[in-house]
Length: 414
Image 1 (spheres, one colour):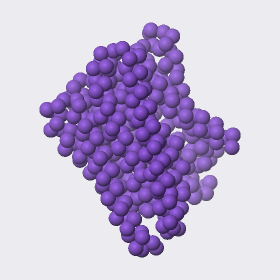
Image 2 (cartoon, helix red, strand yellow):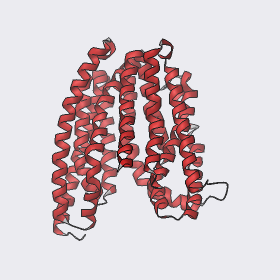
Image 3 (tube, one colour):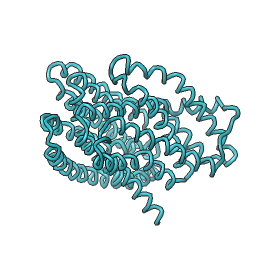
């Protein structure tokens, strides 16, 4: 019980640290630097996601059931998969700088942080699959929390720390330390992968299994990556700084929703669906709906109040002049939060392809609105397009959920 509480404390500290860092950067850095940092964060996150290929969705299940002797070979084969991804995609990422989406001055930081960020992310997932949850939370805190607190403290104490290069250097150090720590724990507990033959048949099987989830996540992750670039195209990097601040406040609602509500409904919904217990499934879905709606309403009100206070505290025109964007971003995140209701119902019934198409439809809806409207309305077209995208996601999942529920009632053993 104590370990579980400590685990929750570590994850809570990590979330709070990232949240506070956004405010500190907005206070102590120029809006342009905050914008560049925002672009770096979403781009590195998206590129790390591409390098990972959602392979962990396959490898984690395999590692859980594998015996000690087989795990080393699996880990070695997973490394082989990622090395292939590195060889294919790493050279392509230079296009971000060639096409002037990111400044050339940060190309070194980009590749260095991307490398350690992806490695530490995969190590974290491996620790979870090996039932080393506390170790995984510690690695996550070092990777995403401890260095944030260090940066905040340094910025408050010294003017010299109020520089984007210092922030990126701290990020690199935090992720690198997480790599060392995570790799040590995996190796000391279960043995090092070592040098040996890669099981390419296993790798191909994993790549095929993860492909559907990869495409789905590629579309959904793209919404919170391409929106920043759209703001840059229709406005300026300073506008990206303001947008990133408001988006950081709004997306924190989703983090709290998932940690405080969603995680508690996953097991019981999946269990009811597997037992084909329609009554239990429907009851859990009703409770889920009530909890999500109430939680999102409370969080939205709280986020709006926080946004008002932060803008007054910062006292910078770049943020106060763009505050009108916040209501659209907040609405988009509220709709996205509500879309978790049908999402969980569909996921529990194993309808992964429905989720795939809903997320692709959301991405297309975003592009269909943002591109033409951006040339007319400017920056505001981006959060408005995000509202349309998440509304499309919600409606698609809701309709499919209703159809699934009707089929469930007519044929509960399907």
